[in-house]
Image (cartoon, rainbow, N blue to C red):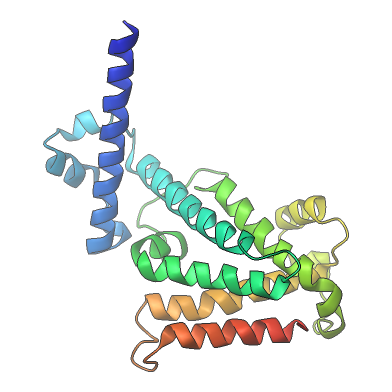
Amino acid sequence: MVEVKSRRERLRREATEEIKAIALRLLAAGGPDAISLRAIAREMGMTAGALYGYFATRDELITTLISDVYTELIDRVEAARDAVPEDDPGGRIVAWGEAVRGWAVGNPEGFRLIYGDPVLGYQPPPEGPAREAELRACDGLVGLAAAVWPRAAATQSLGDSTWSDFDPALVEHVRADFPDLPPAALALALRMWGRMHGPIALEVYGHLRPQSQDPAKLFHIEMLDLVRAVGL
């Protein structure tokens, strides 16, 4: 009986992975709105009704995809960051940014799923589709800012940031994990994210390539300038 159960579980895992793989192919071919349970069932030779035994709704499937894709991204960037010694905070910033770009260029459909326009008709769960990965990304970026803050503080006084400038839930999380950081350090973390995300989004959406023959070089220069801007 145990062997039968384990075989059934294995087949279910395999079918679930196939469903997700097909959904990602549909995403790559037609964008997030192309994900359809009916289309997936047709490709698998199943009825749409049978597919509901794996994912009760399209929203559940999309939530799973977002969580998987976001987790893959965070695994990648954390590994790149941790490959650089902690006593090289500038190098860790560059490694994080370069890893995000490398992943995004290689997985543009995943980048669009996480950071692009909302999927038509999709209703995410109240806590968000990838809460754990989102918190890891937040901690990673704030951690990068915290590591450079002793050097960066003197040059980051513009704007007179206060905690009320930010989302209360974000403030609560950051202050719990980084109790010694001032609000200006959180502002720095968000600005660092913006400097990384902006060029990547331009490249993924096809707006940078006509102007730059070497987007990777341009991005690397931007990361070096970011490091210089925080006093390193």
